Image 1 (cartoon, rainbow, N blue to C red):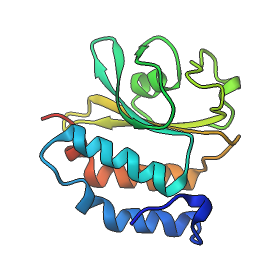
Image 2: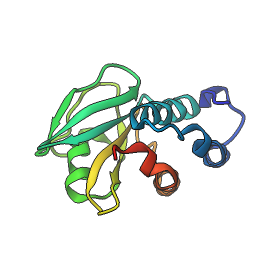
Image 3: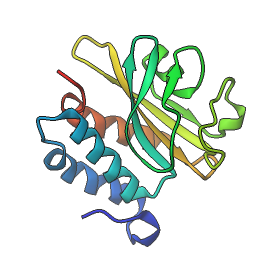
Image 4: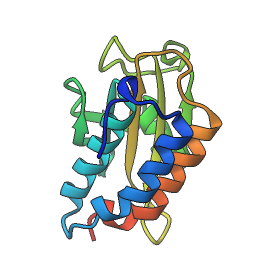
Length: 162
């Protein structure tokens, strides 16, 4: 069902369309951890990004959740980094060059650009963030933001603990 982008003949728009159609059926388990794992794996396999994963809010930190890619930072404090800024501001952040982001936490030197999307519960509280890193500079567009936000919105309740 999913394949790495470098082998795909589809453009990004078509890849998002494929994910829109298949994600609700893939993210339907009663266990949110399993759903996060499959969500991250589907994005990773579809686009071939460097790292795709979740951090969940635990007190004043973000704690590493299911992910695909190289080893990652386990805990991120609320005071610095792209993921923490998306959590604090409760909004998606697109960073074209992570080296220019003040307080960027370099979990991997291969990460060059990043998009981080907050996952909010029914009350609007950020409960987790989806972090996606690319090894290419300026790899995420406004279209990626819109499509990823829509994809998350369609399955968000299945990605969060109840």
